[in-house]
Length: 447
Image (tube, rainbow, N blue to C red; front, side, top):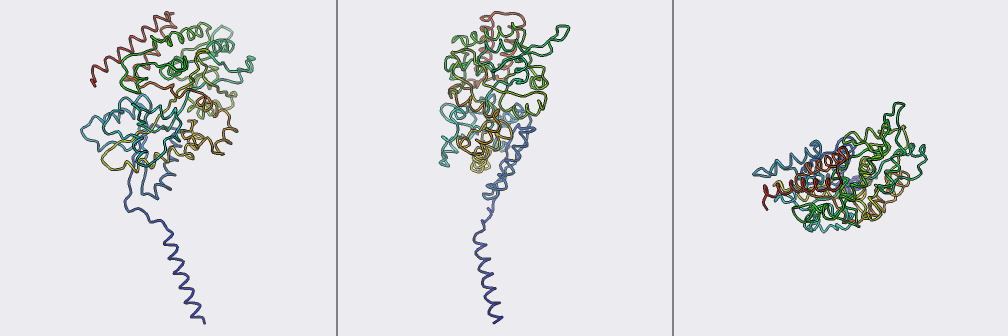
């Protein structure tokens, strides 16, 4: 009897082990390593590393993929290193995936080594309609989505809510006229008449002007070729369509109040320390600014003030995207698996909470965890609502000499204010300088 029980036990054990073995997932014999270059630092790097670790431990483990994230410095550093490799004879040293901002697109969009995200999606029967329309358009070139939106943002107004209450201001400004009026009420001076708190600090650059010019008349273009999304821009349009002069008149009136500080750097620090009561900044700064402000005052955020009542276009999508490259490794499918993971509903929720960037996946907005989080943290919901109310055709510009043009806007507007230059004179000077950069590039890089 004992022998029979022992025999039955052995049979059951073997059967159980057999079933267990069949239920186990066989590990892939070949492991592909996907190299991802990025510019995420601080809180962003922590969030990116967490995402990579989760992928490697789940989908990556199941499919034999290991993602290796490599911090390459600031956005411009990532572009510089990528461009250097693209200019070499071979492609074997290229990373599989690169995170770049909009200023880099012109340098990589025509590369023979770039693998279109739309192609990867099509090969996988992946429905790109789950990605927000404005985000898709932000990385669309000649009708094709060449990158995958990832760290997407919009610009909004940050304000010192405590200072507002002390000054009797109940609502944040809705347009630039109101911005000038409100900013003047927030100025503080010491006993000697020195300004110790400005109402607002900013010197507009490409980032701000993509909104303040682009939002006018429902939607306006800054350059031809649909802001560079259909080809190489050859000239600016803001001198022809009147958007620059309309904006500059408002900005000059703001400066005349004495409430505007022409800060070109350290704006976050000046705002967080209470020396400036309002600033325009990306929604991606929200988590960082909250930490910097601490308990000094109550932080408020609002839609970026529009230029005027006719500027109904809203805001464009900023931030960056992911671009895949062919480096001869045959890793394109493995790279796509990570891209899908990074832009999935759950991962975009985690990325949103950790960084302040808004989710690019439409499904995230239906997630109860997302709804609960934004109800509990209403500041994070402002940029999202602002984007949802915007015209998706309001887009950023893809131009050559992007950093020169960035500083041309900044220095030209600063010169107008400091030297009391006329609005039309400034508009024409900006158009001439930027058109010069576009012409020089076209001559040096014939198509």
